[in-house]
Amino acid sequence: MFILSVVFMTILSISLGVCLFVSGRHLVNSIQLSRIAKTYIGEDVSIYSDIGARFAYKGICAYMNDDYSPALRYLEKALEHSIIHQNSAFCLDWLAKCYSALGKESEALDCLVKAVNSEPANLRALFSLADTYIQQGAFSKAEFYYSRVLQYDSDNLAANFMLGMIRMGRGEYNEAEEQFFTTIGKDEKFLEALEEMSVVMAIKGDYAKMDSYFAQASKRRPNKSDRLEKKLNAIKRMRSLCNDL
Image (tube, rainbow, N blue to C red):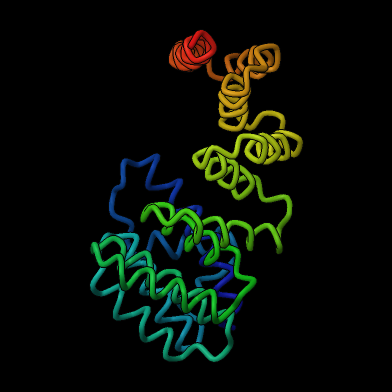
């Protein structure tokens, strides 16, 4: 039964994110959460007899209402009652969110490491851990965990893109090009990959390809094309100056 609630709460986190965005982050009470539950699975998850699921449900409700300390208590209780690895990883990932919201980044990181160790193929935990290392500037560690995501989900566009960004930041432009090319190959409308590919082409001096990727990106976000164009022109001028030395 806990697994059913895990599936529900994953959907819940997405749907609530949309609801909060649209409504300007109004508080979401338990009645509203129950209605969302009924919409997606036809029943109220809070009636589940599994005590771990009930604690997890209450913890997520509290988190969504920005009540992080109660959320921690509920989720820690849920973790205590989690028997299988999948449920433990789920609780640890939400605990990490709570700790991060409270500014306790060390505790958040510890939860994510435990989540990945508990369930190595948990994509959500792997991605959260990689993102955390990015925020800390630990790019090699982030690269390792984004690569782990791709081991289990080779079509993951975000992981492909982030690996490209890491490699471009290290000056590994051929590797970055390959990563962005893979991303665009899986989704030719991936705007950020198109923009960064145009930058890579400018740095490499392949202006024909730069113009092609710039044109594709500009079509999808014309209001941002001026900034990108200025960036590309600056790179071209820098290359010209270096060639004149």
